[in-house]
Length: 69
Image 1 (cartoon, one colour):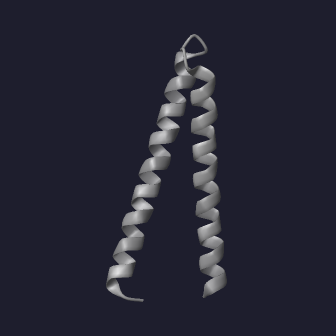
Image 2: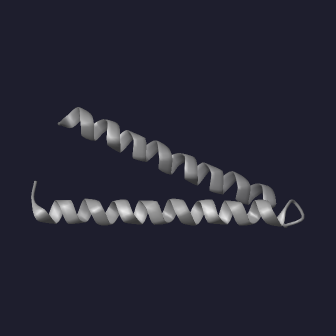
């Protein structure tokens, strides 16, 4: 595997982790604020969907990576 591809993969993984952490932090904050917040339900739905999709994509990438080698 070439050096560029390895660095690109590592950088993309760090960005994925950062996005996952940001989503979970925002979800924690909106849960703490509670239902009186104007956009409570839409934010819960969107943040949960985003987090779930990130986890699914991560698992698929691991599965595809193991299957490919």
